Length: 374
Image 1: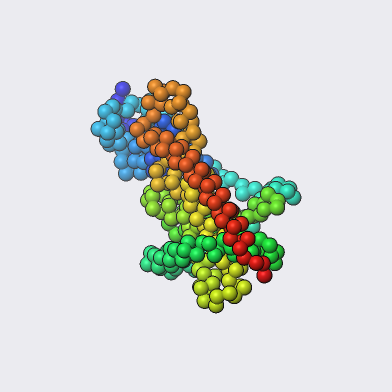
Image 2: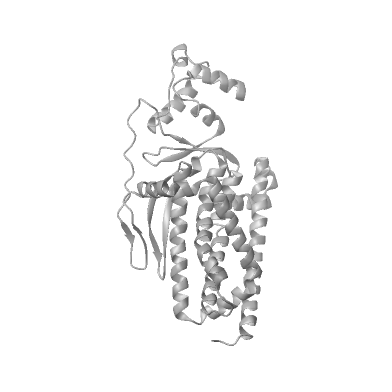
């Protein structure tokens, strides 16, 4: 059934600000996310629905969109198809000229939880706060400046890798000296604060927003958090990767002044032991975050790079299905090989991490036994 002539001339448009994500593999399906940034609600649609929704800009008629759809997918849309789509968008208050958007969700109370575990919102308007920080730091976010800082971090890590044995001995020494250990722990906690703010500032730089900044505790551990919104909907993959990688980059930048101090010290200076342990732990803090295992930033980066959502759970489901029923697994798209590769790669990473940690522990113990305590 063709669309009535009157309906063909209709030019509906999405409400300004509605967000549409790039295509994402989600299990056996390719989906796009649609989000109303006012209410915060989101839902998934398929590629065909995305083809239509993304063209509702108020300049094209339904007839024109229908012709383009027929050329792309080999079938024409009937009146019922258009009515269903427009009703869906209208009910969700996503169409311009329709009912006003739903009221934004309340941010909730400043504190939730109890003494042992909970969260505390620290900033009333996290997006405005990160916007001010972004304006202040914007000159340092020029690609040339970022490139030079990245080279400095890579050079630092190269020197530290060559001094790994010395740094492990410094770490073993630190473990038996409570006062410098507390100082190093405090500095590393400050580095985690910068890590979280870096995600927010990077998001603001590429067009994302920040929903909340606060403190989360699971005693005896308490860490800062920064909730970044909407950057999944950025069109450029490199912008998404930059937001996810910003935290680890900030951790490395935090170490650069201490690295300069460490290299300037005379051999045998006791301060060098504290700085060496800080540099080792701080580097581990940054680099481990880049490992592509949940919930680390590297896992988020890999998902963005592959355009996959829910990589770990969807991958686990695919592998179980493949082992149980190969015929059913054959219904997945060819890209689903990503899931099998990730399952194998993550298992190898876990085994490799266990081997590295075991070897490092044995090396530190052996090295410490050859050094008399001071």
